[in-house]
Image (cartoon, rainbow, N blue to C red; front, side, top):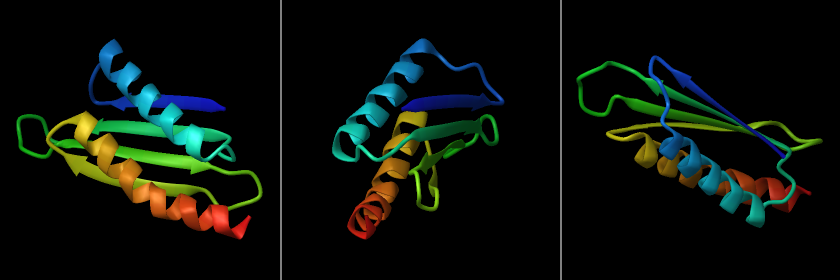
Length: 97
């Protein structure tokens, strides 16, 4: 399993990297078929509310990639919202298999 985290328009902290890795690894325990996770964290418009966006793409061999993107006041909240949006997609993909 490969986890790629990309910070766009800001410098990512070690604490945020650890948070994202922990959340993705927790997801992997429930859905072992995931082979790759690409996380793009973007600072949309500095100094405005809800300016942090998390886009998460999950790759599952033999199936179409799953993607969710959410915007929130913090990157942690955006990651949580994006992962929550991915769960129904993962359940559906699990049923297809």
